[in-house]
Length: 598
Image (tube, rainbow, N blue to C red):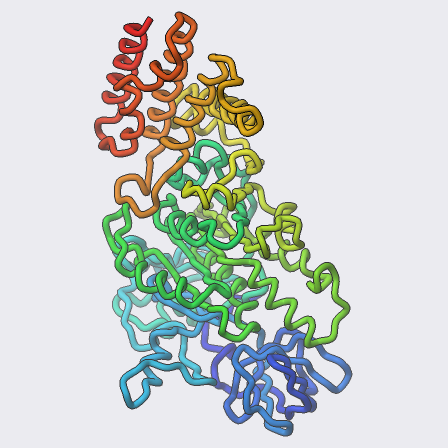
């Protein structure tokens, strides 16, 4: 496919190849007649208000359209205009820091242009505002000269879009040849900055959201996405270019966990898709993200973030499109050689949008009313993640890591979206309602969660050589503690032998002082990998010293309550430049105090 490098139809108001009229209206689904040249997934404008929609079925002379806005007031006989192009997103400088709706319309600009007489921002139906600012000037620094030969994916030049990221302007797909002209200096996104074989190439281009962007080749997932969350990085890491799912019932902390991942994960760009979430939750995201400081660069977090907002009371058709919009924007920055993290919150609401539209189309329902193609649509989304070598002679490496939250009704993981997602995601972070009720956050159940990515070699090479050994010890101890807690619930703690009560004491340290992590604490919200290792090493040393003291005849309660053991809970607040020395000192102190008991 040739990438569109000049303005074309998409959600613009340029005419199209055909016109028809409304024949039937059923919620977000409109049936039109007279669109003789309509094609599947073409964008159309419906009614006098010119509401944007997408062709989803062609049945003889009738064209079925899902409309991205509220269809209230649309009457039979109103005009329908076909643009002749599928839903596309605009790609170029100006994306970072922006807030879009599900079809990439800039929400702040839409609200500002439709304020009511009392000063309250409102968004009217049918508003069409370009995603990228057409008047803003960008300082283009060319990386090619006249006479250079270029192929798709080659670097043409750069734009310093924000303090956190340099925007790379690449040769569009389908364009190759000899550079015949270069323009340096300030330019608008639609103005040509380079000419290839005499043809103008602008900084802005378009791409259909449902079509994956091509790459040279895919890479094996061998490097983790470091998140700073101890339970994630140590027990269930996700690879760069991998996929993860976060299923959990109401109140288990899915949104907070995704926001922590967006803020602290080691990704160059974050795309946060609020798909069908409650308005108050999404409002918090929109208010807090612009004020957050990026811990990696010190600049505002929004300088490397794109927000796509589609609340639960917005039209379901736009909710369905928002997922594709987000993944296409992520692929665009991946092609520039960046690591991108996409947070989808939540895919359950996306699936509900599919179910509602499918019901309007009177399609045969499958399990729990979802359409039979639910698993296919989920696969199309998750399989666009990956770590790749991009097109171009440079051979840049970039990645898109997808983290999708799932909101199963009643926390039932057997429902269709969770089950289909489990077959697609490489990492499963199962949020537990009982842990959330006990105020244990992140409420990731270490007994049911898992990761399919083999990343121990990277951790042993980059952190410590015995990382996998420490991780295996922790998993074994937590499993043994879980079995003993079942016995305690039946018979009480007095029924356990002393070595078993030592396991319970060490397990409690792991759960309360290592796995628990406050997303609202400035110090504890992020934990570096070396600090995670040091904390785990201290807890293992406490377990070893405790076992030795009990073998010498010391009571478990006395050994567990030595002053040094109380310092374990304060490890999370150790400064980053002191944790190695403090860990060694605390281990020595624990061993000494335990020996004094014997």
